[in-house]
Length: 363
Image (cartoon, one colour):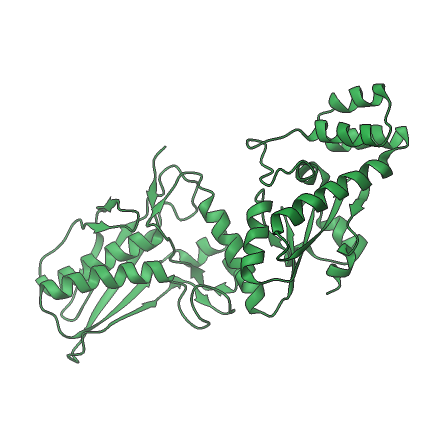
């Protein structure tokens, strides 16, 4: 599969090309930069406009085989010489680049959502050209994305408090196909943000699958939770590192049954054994041989739970399953934080909860 290049790499390349054209007086149709991953990026330079004291140009983003919403977007840089003999580089965002409105992100409130690694890349590439042409004046660099505000509607930016456009991001400079890196970074950012906003305890959930259940049962909106997708173990690690005191995991039995077997990445490609774990709980709860066989033949946990319910052992099974889930979650937490859990079914509602789970919802 083909890797692509981040918005940060595009911004750095556009900025380097713009300052080069401004200082050299020559048109530059392509430019070369080194990404933090050690991979050279040589994009075409498009839509060039050169004036006496400023120059703008764009780079078309290529995301490789990753389904990135910014693929084919144009990332522009406009550079301007400030005749002050100070040699500084000022980086800011223009139209289509979001602005930070909430604490806990890579940039402070009020700054353009151009993360620290892209800022460093832009500074390095621009300064390289300034030194080449012995430019001792300061340079303003404005990064802008004409369709950025529209693209941002398809991202988590609004949820994170980044308004007015997309973020200029990337820690390696490259986009890895179907990479988990972006998901894990999003989880980490959301957790950091919640901590910065003063939260001592945090709710994490694989997704909004049980939103109606949580609203009806507890009056809790899962939109307030940090979404951890399949990465339950890493989310607990990050919550611990962020300094939270307690974590509440809320999720559907179809995912959380795997946790009762110590599986901390619940993606089916990483491991399943849902029915085996349901059957193990049934054995512990005195299930009949026929019910065990029936459970093992099920294709969904909802179907399996119905068998246990008809057998009259569903309650005991869930007590055992919640005990094992609690054991593995707190084993992962290594005693640094306490982890509670609530699990549910769309058909059956609340299936199980650990001792202090509901208390965390009220905190």
